[in-house]
Length: 288
Image 1: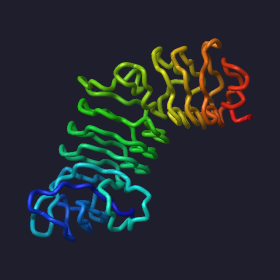
Image 2: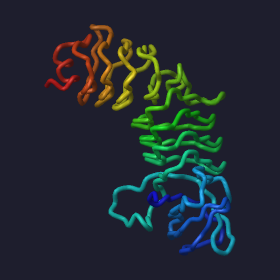
Image 3: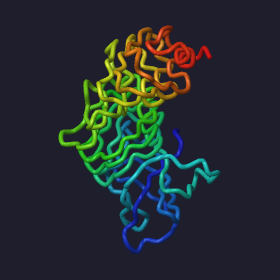
Image 4: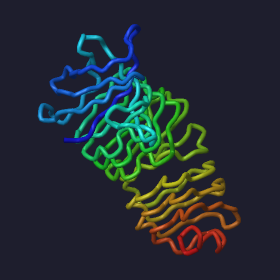
C-alpha cells in the first residue's frame, strides 16, 4: 500500500472548514480528510484499481458537494503532521502506471509525482500553468512528456532527474514560453536550458548557441552521453550539472571563454580534460 496521496482543492462557495470522508467515483476507494485550509489528504486502496489513477473524475464529500482539484505538490518541511497537512501544496505518489488529471489543474508543485516509479504515461491538461522542482523526479518508467501550450513556468531544478526511460520532452504548438529542440526543453528565447531527458539515446549533445547557463543537475545521470559541446555564450555551469554521467568523457568549448564552474559539475564522469583553465578543471571534476 503506497503512502498518502494529498490533493490541493478549491472549495465551492459556502463550504467551510470540516473533516469529511469521501470516495472517488471510478471504483477506487479512498480514505480522505479535509483540512480547514482546503487540503484533501487521500489514501487509495489499489486492490480495487487497475493501475490507472483517474483524478479527472468528480470528487465529492459525504454530502455530495463537489471539490475541484487545482494543484498537486509537496509540503514544506515545517514539522506539520503529514496525515493532516496544514499547507495547500502536497505530494502525490503511488504504484500506478497512468494518471489522468482534470482540466482544472493549474500547478504540479514541488515533487508532485516524485518517485512514481511505475508511471508510464501522463497527459498534462491544457489548464496547467506551472511545473515545480522535482515534479517528475524518479519517474523511472515515464516514456514521454509533452508540455501544454499554456504552461508559463517550468522549474529547471531536477524536474526530470532519474527519469531514465524518458527519451524526449515535447511542447505543444503555440506555447510562448518554451520550445523543444531535439527533445530537449529550452526557454522560447533559447537562453535557458530547462530540462534534458535522461533517457535520450544520443551519445553527443551540442548545447545550442545562446544558452547562458547550465543549471545544477540538469544532465545528471544521463548515462548515454559521451560528449558535450559547450558554446561560448555559456558563462556558468551549476553544481553537479553532469554528475553521474559515467560515459561522458569529452567536453569541448572555447578556451578563451570565462566559465564559472560551481560545485563539481563533472563529478563521477570520465571527463579528465576541460577546455577552460586548470583551476576550474580541478574544481569541476572534484579533484580540488
